Length: 379
Image (cartoon, one colour):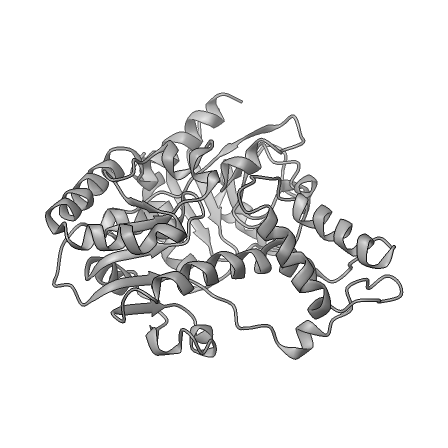
């Protein structure tokens, strides 16, 4: 099937998604494909009107499978790109002609016979163009953090379908301990819920039944993100006071990070300048990430916390090489690694150049558009 018109839909009208939509559209347009989109997952009336007006051959949606839009005409191909489970289990994502996942370990767990694969973020080299500028800080971190748990969140009953023997706050230490015990194990996304249920049964003798989407999200995502981000930040703040944190104002709600918080960045141009004006940009190590690609494309040097998933299918080591494109560190070795590279500025400059060249050769949004078109042709 020849694809002439593509529509892309991202989940919400945040500054990040607005910028990302433009970058993804540009990648398809570079292939000569007429492309448009919106920063919303449209309801039946709006999507039907959109299809009537723009007549897309292919619709690409982030975090929504075709099974959620059964009214979509069968002759229109549908691609789902799952970047966030949002508390849903793996078997929820069905019906699309191709289902892509953000993480390589998710691909191997896909339970359906329809086409699936890994789609890593690309970079827009026009938005995140290369360059250098005077360093304004030693370390920078650009990213999200949730606010600390509120009393209302901690007091939520865990077993909402029956007698609540434990609150979330009482359950949380047991769950965190379990995650720490499996910190070096790569396991399926649904295992977060399996482990939570097993812990609850050991504590109470009853199965865990949750009908609150927010609580499901907290168990399957937020607790894990807290754990990864806090451990990383608590390590790096001990090494230098020259740190800048960018993201939501939630950073300022954490006493241990408040002094380093700058502001929330909404303009890609401003984000690019931060990457370029930081000696090191730190990432807590979640595979191929949007910020990783944008930072490398901009000429920023990224330090990446090493986790087992980085060496698996779709992980960072699948595409980039330590000490050539980025700097890898284990938390317990961060002080030694950090000081070693601080004293080798010429080598750091070489890593920046290598990363920029690799992005342009293999990891732009044009490359991702080519991948999707090639996969469509295989259907």
